[in-house]
Image (tube, rainbow, N blue to C red; front, top):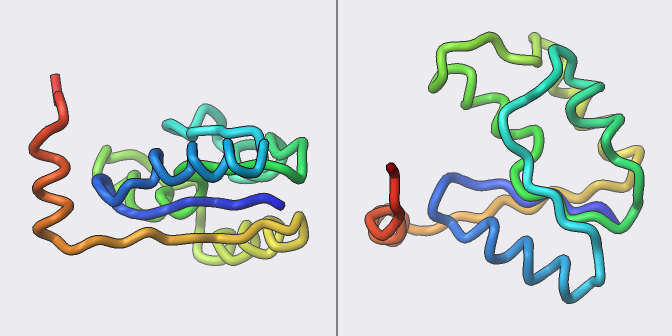
Amino acid sequence: MITIIEGSDGTGKTTFARKLADQRNADYFHASHPTSLNWVEEYIRPIKSDNLVLDRWHVGEIVWPYIYGRSSLFDEDSFDQCNWELAKLGAHLIVLTRSEDAIADELSYRDWE
């Protein structure tokens, strides 16, 4: 099973994803900033196994370009196409949420330097 864990900073994505990967004896991968200019190269081709836990995968690409002032890998239709391709691979999406206060509390403990 391919599981994609998404959510805002401070929701516990990485903690949850690592525990899930350990529990399932799955490969764990934490995505960072895109290294290609194409969503297929970035979010589809790297999937080489059906036993993966992906920590922050494609959904962040909706938000991060605005935060970092860069172009998105997705255009008007390609986000839906990416979701379709991931679904064909058997991917499941879990979005973690927490209260704003809990997120603010969690982020206050992080070292931002």
